[in-house]
Length: 333
Image 1 (cartoon, rainbow, N blue to C red):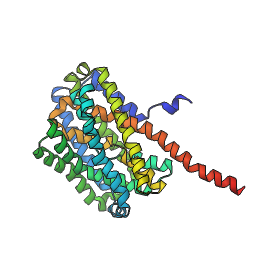
Image 2 (cartoon, one colour):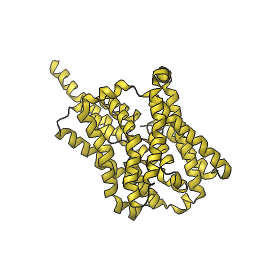
Image 3 (tube, rainbow, N blue to C red):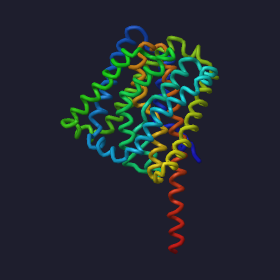
Image 4 (cartoon, one colour):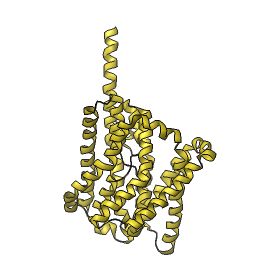
């Protein structure tokens, strides 16, 4: 078992390098304001390209698996937020207020797209359903995540006003809608250059992380956040996964879903999107820039943890799927 198996991917290393850069050389003053404008423009471009990427036919096709998608959406936008609220006493006891706010924000985010599809494929699940479910989750998340933030966080003294939420929804949704409308003209170009969209995703995340951590470091993030709170954040993120994944497995089996559909439900319903989450945090918590670094830290931790856990679960599903085939082969011999 070599180091290569456990070595972080290049994007994770880039994230860590960006956090280190912001910690050592944070952006300040006029440079920080100019950086903020560039970041806002990158976020608008990101949502525009995501709108251009999503085929309308995929949305229509997805309606055929409405029970599966309903399970995924219920997990993403109902189960996770309820668990986040249920963990409030633990979060307040072990975390700083910003870190708990970040954990609660993680619980309100849509599912990932790329990794949900990849792990569903590895495990031998319903890839087509995973594509549609994860894509629709991100589409709904543009509206539902800000609304959940307004409903849950504002009631706990941590979120933006309803007026701000409405403005945010329009700010995020408008580029997405314009991109989707423009798909008839630029859709082919976007489809041919999907790696460029991936670079836009990652580049925007790195911009937001650098800006957020710069403001947080200037505000005393590392001075005011104890190591025990960071370890507790890791433990709470692990607890969320430990609660959600077995629950989804149990629900899928109780509702009589096929094994392939169960796999899609488990992987799409247990993920949270960093690609959407960090840009959304930048817009949703524009008035909390001094604490934004701590707010996105739980999302970065959860993202890495979900990749590690889901890789193990996907391999286990794949091994279970191979077992009946091996038995049939032996019987045929």
